[in-house]
Length: 235
Image 1 (cartoon, rainbow, N blue to C red):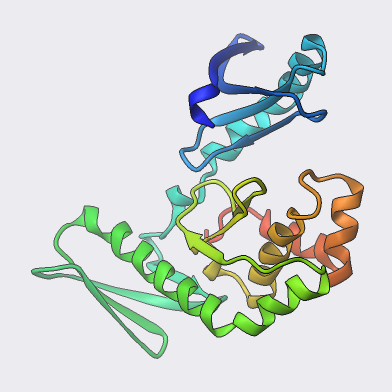
Image 2 (image 1 turned 30 degrees about the vertical axis):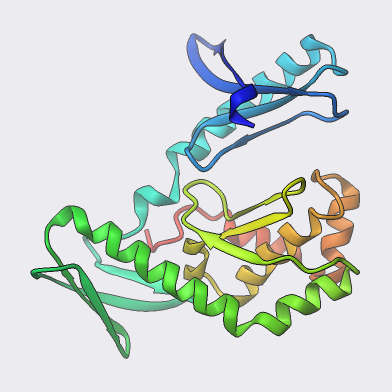
């Protein structure tokens, strides 16, 4: 899809904002942030250009703020030196070593790193391994979500996402959730999985979409609110 984009720029209150514009024939327009922390606008040849520009002006500053608050920038607070794994606090015991490694014992994580730049790499590995295990351990639960919505099951994948908790590619039938979600509770992780599965039925965030989500998780509004509360690694 990136091959079809146009790099555009808009000025709001004297500040320049860049974004990638992808034009389609669909009836709706959208704006978001991709995995590279780039603002992407989905335009439409059906929608008037003036309407699209107005839509961008109303939303692009929110996207810039979202990028600045990227969870990747706050994966660990070095003053407090702890992280969350499934909403449980783990103290970090960090030392130098010949190679990067980690060991989890009770409520502590012993990390050996070759240099300071290696710390984030080790932490990302921890979250990746934990999320991989979570998906495997909850295989039947995830299958039940597909069954409840009468949707043919597709794999739930995971990877490090900087600016979103998950995404669903309706055309390719791909669902990814962020490894960093493992910092949260199981309820919050499951909400994101349900959210992305629901997009297989409704591609946008219309009332119809939220009605689909509510059939499985009626209290989704409170969970969404909790997920939006600032940095997720203790601030």
